[in-house]
Amino acid sequence: MKQLSVIGCGRWGTFLGWYAANYCVDKVMLYDIPTSPNFLELKDTRKNSYLTLSDNMHLTPDLNEIFKNDNIIISIGAQHLRSLAKQINQYNLSGKHFLLAMKGLEQPNAKILVDVMAEEITQDDVHVACLGGPGHVQDYLKGVPSCAVIDSYEEEEKKHWIDLMQSELIRFYYGSDVVGNQIGAALKNVIGIAAGILDGLEWYGLKGGLMARAPVEVGRLIKHFGGNPMTAYGLAHLGDYEATLFSKNSHNRLYGELLAKGEKSSKSAEGPDTLKAVKFIADKEGIDMPICQALYKVVFEDAPIKETIRSMFEREAKSEF
Image (cartoon, rainbow, N blue to C red; front, side, top):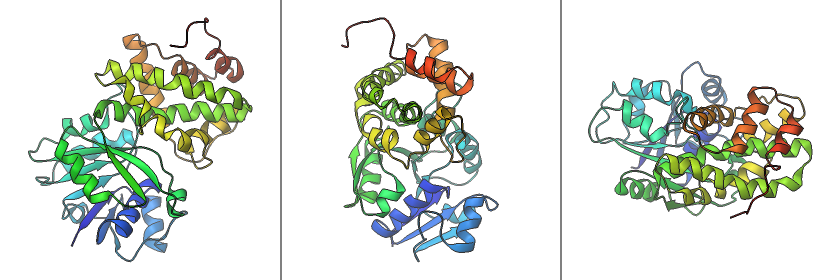
């Protein structure tokens, strides 16, 4: 019997558990903090705003139950990963396989999440991969197929997770740049905020410019950390633009749209936290990131939105390439 565990019962974590239960494995265990609203809702009703749990999905408030399975997906806020990793390092994790399904960079140093796990999990024979690429729960539940990328420092770990998770609904590709795919996946949320601001201002004509210039900027950050800047043009970043820059289901795009209208979003968005990390490292290391710099001023420094966003596209004239 093939089994899998999920830590994190938010929108994405619960969906990945549902996906695994319906397409990949025989049984799924879901864990979250017992008092969390997401866990309580699922416990009381066996459903959330997006889906109903399958009969082969089981909730548990006990991490011991989660680690009875060798395959564990983690889908929590990126800034909480280090504390979780410290907590679970107290368990016997030998032979376990982890798939990090959230998209973000740790503050303040823009550390990728695979490296956060490696720093805190001190045991041998523990394997970690990461997931990136497009897809919204609402679309998947309608049967709309998509693609994603799985990457790891270990070649065999990529194969392990792709063999386990592949289906007609989601086609998984092998990643070849952990640094680039983690940074690209995180930064697409930041660019999603910028796209939302353009929507809120009704400056739709600048979205093409944003899409063309943002991967160049993201590539600079990837290169700084030792990755391949071309990875910014892959599934984890540019490939996720349709889902993040245009979809009504994108929390980060909605965050930006409401910000431009002087409103606040009630939906969780990873982009602002990632933006803080990017601003810190870009300033510290002198990385040219004009889109992120302008966006930071708007999001955190109350800079005038129209003038600041326009400034992103009014720099000194130069060759495109």
